[in-house]
Each structure stands twice: as structure tokens, then as C-alpha cells.
Image (cartoon, rainbow, N blue to C red; front, side, top):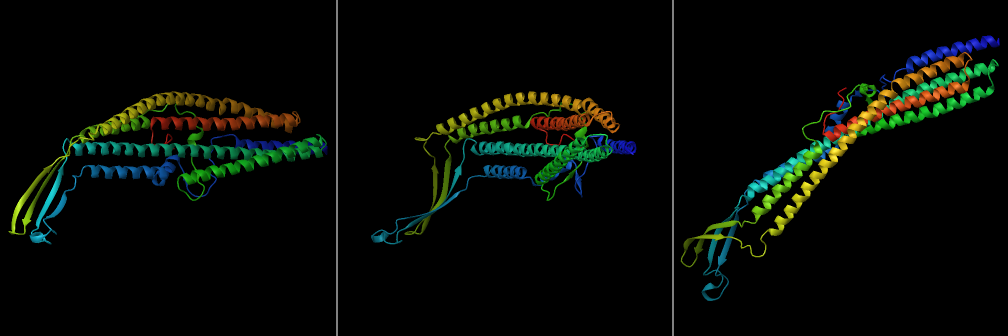
Amino acid sequence: MANCSHNISKFLFIAILSNVLSTAQPLHAETVFATGQAFTLREAVARAQESAPGVQGAKAAVDSADAAVQAARLLPNPTLSVEAENILGTGRYARFGGSETTYSVAMPLELGGKRSSRTRVAQAEQSAAQIGVAVAKADLTLKITQAFIAVAASERRLRIADQRRELAVQTERVAHLRVGAGKVSPIDEQRASAQRLRADVDAGRAARATEVARANLARLIGATQPLAIVAPWFDDTSAEAGIDAPESSLSRAAAEAQVAAARARVDSARRARIPDLTVSAGTRRIKETSDTAAVVALSIPLPLFNRGDAEVARARAELDKAEAERNAAALDLAEALASARADVTDARASAISASGPELAAAQEAARIARIGYAEGKFSQLDLIEAERSLSQTQEAAIDALATFHDARARLARLLGHLDPIYKD
């Protein structure tokens, strides 16, 4: 009877082992945990850019800059004047008896190319605002990609945790049968129960982490419920470590735009020192004789107290500051790119190793331990140790893949890529 029970437990455990191995083998299978549409990375980024506050704010800044360009091109407004002389006096000048009324229009004439220089300042600020939109989109692409990576990694952790829990349940069942058959000590059953309880806790934690990651992604793209995703690229380490660089990174372009705007302000400040001429023309009516006469006037300010030197000095200082920040940004970018490329290369090597030979060795060791335990050749402690090693290796593989994709996404952001690095 005991031998029969042993054979039954052996057959049961091997059957369970085959079933679990058939579902647990790949880390590459896609798992969808939500009903409804499953989003790719490209679709998620496109949807987020439609409503993301950062992108919308950057676009509003462009609209403001466009309006500023239009305003800079406008001519100054003329001034309409009405003057009454010789009124409210005494004698013949009492009330309006001898009044003289003048109607005139004064038109400022901007000299020295002030309007064109003012327009160039507005256009430079417009270019900076347009680069700001690209920066906002690149930042959003990075944020969505990182959220996608978090969801993909959490889904795989959940799948592994569920498989581990199922195996722990079956191991507990086999331990119960073997204790009943008198083949092992009751301690084995208690130990198996403890392992099953721990697996339940781990699976619950993984499920909650997955829901949080999916809810975070949903919030980023403006969805009302957690999203299902499609990310076949997560398990792929064949992507090249490097990423093609565009002609200019966004940080460098933004710094250059600030320098261009500062130079335009220096030119505008210099031209503002040239006094403007105001031309007035009108007509005067002399009430006493009912005659009319033309009135013409020219006026120009005298730069006695404010020659504009302070404004020029301030503009030059701002230009010096913008150039220094541009040079600092170039140095920071070069350092960040070198570090990011090294991170990608290191992360790729770790991901290839962790998800390849290391994982295969741990899976084979666990398989042998399961079969050996079912046949009574290995102790339960050997099985637990093999399972723990496999669990740690699987977690390390997922972490390495997530680190690799995150490093690539950060490198793409430094290079100024607006589109996702993975085309699904």
C-alpha cells in the first residue's frame, strides 16, 4: 500500500511538473490581464501626446510666441490730438470767444530698424518655443516608454509568481501523500505548507504591483481604466546597443535657440538707442476770423539722461550667460551620452546572460530537482534550494531586461528622439 502511494505521488508530481514546465518555460509569451484593446508602445505614445498637459502647455507657449511675432511686426499707433487755446480768459477771451482749435495727428517713425530687430527677437523666442514642444514630446515619450517597461516587467513577474504558487500547491500535495505513505517526515509537509503560503503572498504582491503599473500607464495616456499592453520587444535583446543620433540633440538645440534670442535682444537694445522721430500734421481753426491754417511739427527725444547703455549692457550680460549655459550643456550632453551608451552596452550584456545561459541552467537544475524529489532521490531541501535559485534567476532576468530597455530609452531621450525606440 505504501509502495502504491509512493508511485501515485511520483506519477502525480511528474505529471504536474510537465504541465508547469510547458507553461513556465518561456519568458517571451505575451500576457494580457485586461479586457478590451491592447495598446502598443507607439499607440500609447500617440494617444498621450494628444492630451498630455506638458505637451499642451508647450503648444500654448508656441501660440503665444506666434502672437508675439505678429505684434512685433505692427507699426506704432498714431496719436490724435485736439487742442484749444485762448479759452476761459478775460475780456474778449472769456469763455470761447477768441479760441483757436487745433486738430492734429502725430505718427511716430521708428528709426534704425527697430521694428525689424524687434521682430527678430520675437522670431527667436518663437523658435525656442517650438523646440520646447519637441522637448515636451521627447520627455513624454521617455515617460510612456518607462511606464510600458514597468508594466511588461510586472506582468512577467506575476506570471512567474503564479507558476511558482501552482508548483508550491502541487508540492504540498505530494508532500502530504508521501508523509501519509510514511516515506518522509511530517516536517516535509509543514515545510511545503510554509513554501505554499509564501508563494501565495508573493503572487498577491505581484498582482497588486501589476495593477498599479498598469493604472499608472493608463493615467499617463488619459485612459479611465488599466490598460492591456503588447510588448514583444521586452524579451528581445537582439537590438543594437547604440541608437542612431539625429543631427542635433534637443538640449543642444534649446541652448542654441536661447543664444540666438539673446543675440537678437542685444541688437534690439543697440537699435533702441537711436531716437525716434514723431511727425505731426493738422489744422488750426481761428474762431475770431473763421480762418484755418495747417499745423506741422517734428519732435525727437533728447538722450540726455538715458542713453540706453544700461539696456545694452544687460542684454550683453544675458548673451554671455546664454553662451555659457550652451557650452555647459554641450559638456553635460557629451558626458551623459558617454555614460548612457556604456549603460546600454552593459545592460544588454547582462540581459543576454541573465535571460540566456543563466536562466537555462537554473531551469534545468530545478527540473532535475523536481524529478529527483518525486523519485525520492533528492531531499525536499534540495528541491527548495533549486526552486529558490530559479526564482532569483528569473527575477534577475526580468530586472536585466527592464534595465536594458530603460537604458535604451534614456539614451534615445538624450539624443532627442521623439518617436518610440520600439515600433512593435
